[in-house]
Length: 192
Image 1 (cartoon, rainbow, N blue to C red):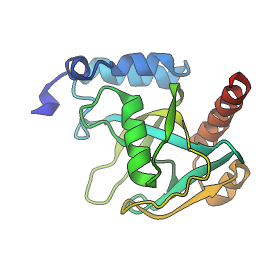
Image 2 (image 1 turned 135 degrees about the vertical axis):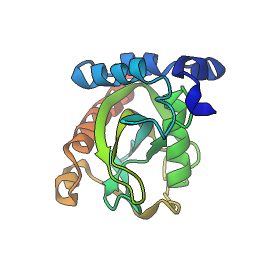
Image 3 (image 1 turned 90 degrees about the vertical axis):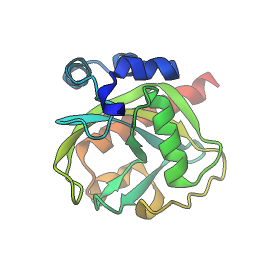
């Protein structure tokens, strides 16, 4: 039944509107495409929406040494930041924080709003048709001394320096996300 509800009605239950999160992110053609998806597909918060659907993800950073946390995703078989499907939740910051907590096992994560990045990428999970993830991306700050334990969604999870990303075969969108998130982290440190 969830797929029959529109994104704004779903958001009304949570107090957040997905379009507001997208509008508060970086401007440009990616933002416009995500807003077009929301306008043309009232079920965009549902993972069955095609050509794609909304996701929320988190670049988890350790402020002490400016490392970031990546997981080697079991299904997609590549290094990614934590994140996942909205599944009807219009509060994409909450989605990103929930997914980061579940996928890393770290308690006490703190999310920084607004989003630092927006991205649209094609995924081809096993037993599913290829489709787009319209990803709203946030900086999430780990508490001092945080140790990630991961969960069933990853084969490996580790802290890395942003300079290691190109050698790990990550896509350019993840490199861009890391750059933007670390800039935000530096600004938060200056403000604090």
